[in-house]
Amino acid sequence: MPEQFLDQARRVVVKLGSNVITAANSLNLDVIEAISSQISVLMDRGIEVILVSSGAQSAGLRKMGMTTRPAEMPKRQAISAIGQSGLMMAYENSFEKSGKKVAQILLTAEDLNNRKRYLNARNTLNTLMEWKVVPIINENDTVMMEEIKLGDNDNLSAMIALLMDADFLFILTDIEGLYDKDPRRFPDAQLIKKVSSLKKEIEEYAGNIPGTLGTGGMLSKIKAAKKVASAGIPMIVAKGNINNVLLRLFKGERLGTYFVPKNQKLASRKCWIAHTLAPKGSVVIDDGAVRAVRENGKSILPIGVVRVEGEFEQGAPVAFKTAGNEIIGIGLVNYRSSDIELIKGLRTSQIEACLGSKHYDEIIHRNNMVLKDLF
Picture 1 (cartoon, rainbow, N blue to C red):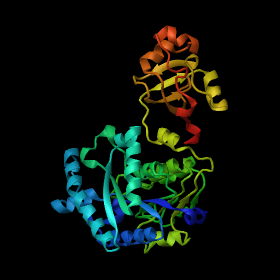
Picture 2 (cartoon, one colour):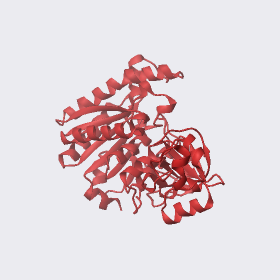
Picture 3 (tube, rainbow, N blue to C red):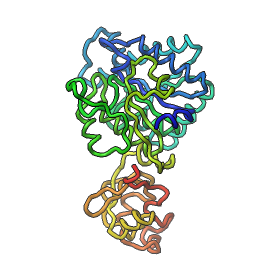
Picture 4 (cartoon, rainbow, N blue to C red):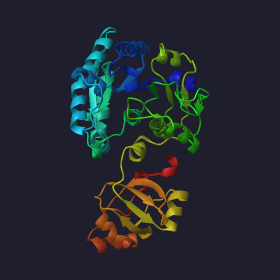
């Protein structure tokens, strides 16, 4: 049950959606102040809190006197830039009442895909928490393009929970949790209070419950739950404007939907590979290599590779899959795609003669791969 995790939680991530902190295309300052006050209470108890907050576009729309979000990407980015300062000012004013300072962190997928930048972000966040400063994180919409887009803040909050080895993730939204159908349309909808396994039917429930103001509906929250569950991090989706929602959850009150984490958790580096990196291509392996990887935890050697798909450099994340196109997992390659084309099907003893040098025996080392079953 969630209480056992909450009793031991020392670092948590709280995600606030646009639909919680905005009303009539402007920021709901009462809700922002209420959440800020609750976070301050938790910090006074010795709990580190990282806040992931949407709302910049809504704040920008109000500043510009606009009632609907522009269709053009440059205008959306400009609106976000205008609104981000107002969003941060609202938080700064709210946290100041409890004697707390805040810091703004804006991220793109590039910041998390690059291992060095990923670790730099973690070091910065750790320093802020040592200083008892509240990190407030949002996607950097101003420079966002499809290639560097994180998707939505549900995904971002999960990535931050993994990055910071959080003990719990709270996603606060505009409905009480996950229902078996959309409660805004069906009066007989039933709240699912506990999800022990993220089966296909759970995704089907979530797929029918869209978001309102934000980009992410309930399905994006299920995807976030999958990510953190693989790292052993529990998650709760609850209604954000319930009175003292965070404090009541920490008291053990059963609110929202609780997502049970997996007992077998991935290591931090493997979480980064599985959930942060986007494959740049793929290698197709034969049946023997599939068995060796799946059943015996072996590395992928050149002799087991039958085909290369896409162009990628050494160190790139790639999917590895069967001849039937079933993805088995993702890993970091030791050779670029053009070299793998040359050495596929060869024994490791033949690599040097083919390429002129041999730095690795493996195409993908077992320490740098994650099987799909684990995430």
